[in-house]
Image (tube, rainbow, N blue to C red; front, top):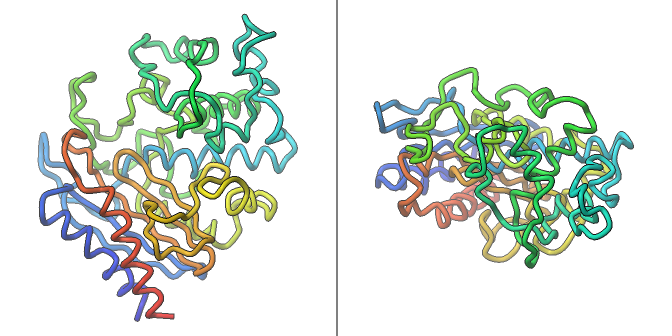
Length: 340
């Protein structure tokens, strides 16, 4: 069985979702450690205000894949270079974090690793965009706010703080970081896939970031804001499989360090997770709210990305994405295992 046939079989559930009208469009890319790859796509890049067919060249809003493709890599590369220490507090880079309560603020004790692994007390999300329209002021708000405490949860605030830390250390905005062909912070240089008809902004998001907080914070904070083509995401996945992006020590941080569900930045395979139960224990993955996802199975030397615009024209519909993702993963792995 060829890699093209593996991709074709894996794409079957996505094609069914497109043809059934549950999602407008989808692209699946599969790549092996030796660089052999295949892509399959179908459906529409936009339904409103005008219909537009999806092509291989379309750029997707990657949403929270920004956390792993961009911010996690940035933090770990800075750690490689000795410019930060993962178990040191964020205040090494952001000394003005909660600067009016230096003695007592719990935020000042948070480490880079705490935020990478989502083991802080910070909330999952906060409507930061409702507090103003100036990106600099909103970043100051994030730094000085006394956040409500709770149990560790997956938190966008963790990665907004990490993004600010990276900018402080490098002296440059996140879009200045080289990300590879077919990847970048918006607006994308090519045709864009539409996301939501946003009630706040009063228009369909197309080529501008869907996430409201990312938009309000200037379009390129640490938790969202990246766009990518299916080939761009595959290029990143292939480089991860080949160990070309991070040092062996930092690859250990993303593959095995942490608890049974999380590593630095990524989720690791567990029963019932979004990548499918057929994944090896040496698999990491991440999803994005707009309907994106990336999974890397190191034991098999295999990675795949499923990119959809499931929030178009609204997030308030049942797209079936939570069952679609593992179904695609199961099909990809089943076909791959037959091939090998």
